[in-house]
Image 1: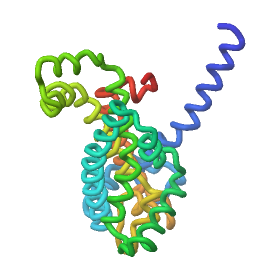
Image 2: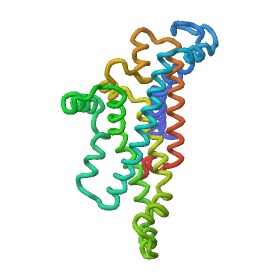
Image 3: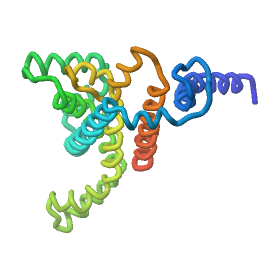
Image 4: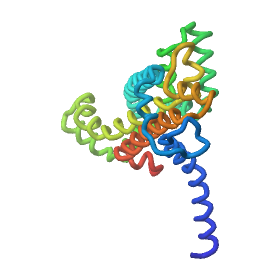
Length: 259
């Protein structure tokens, strides 16, 4: 191994260590038998048991799951339609409208949605406003995944279906839909993951008295980072990683950057 390659590997390992060591510390200290995270006091699982009896945490988790499921379902439907339209008709304005929320900074999107809900729609902030916000930033991710899936297909498949007399609806139902189904599943899982752990946008559009899991965790760490916070963070981390890995199995080219 030459000197340049050695330093490249060393720099890469240093970056990954910087990213993943704090996550490992959170997981390890979620089993710490102490109210303080200053030192290791022994192994325990009582913080996970305590989570199961925390009504505020359970309510926040239920809100997050409900919003994530609904927003992912709606975003998958609308994102699939957008991806199909972008690939097939290539409109100039649609990619800009769909992808702008993806590229926009979260804090700017959160403020924009807050002003839109309150000053334009006069909508009371709550679960509905969170749902609409999550759908807004999730559609673009689904559209990109679906479009990438369609771009890798042979167009002669669809031409053959039309030559055999299939109507546009029959072509979509019997040819297009089965082929893009892995992309739809990957898009759904990606949208679900983005929704369930979103904090910045949710913080602006949640309103008073409505909590999601990230907001509940934030309210807890303002006092102190207890092992209970580490426990719920570990569970959320495990769920997020599982969904991302599952999505990568359905659409590996998209999520690995080879689309």
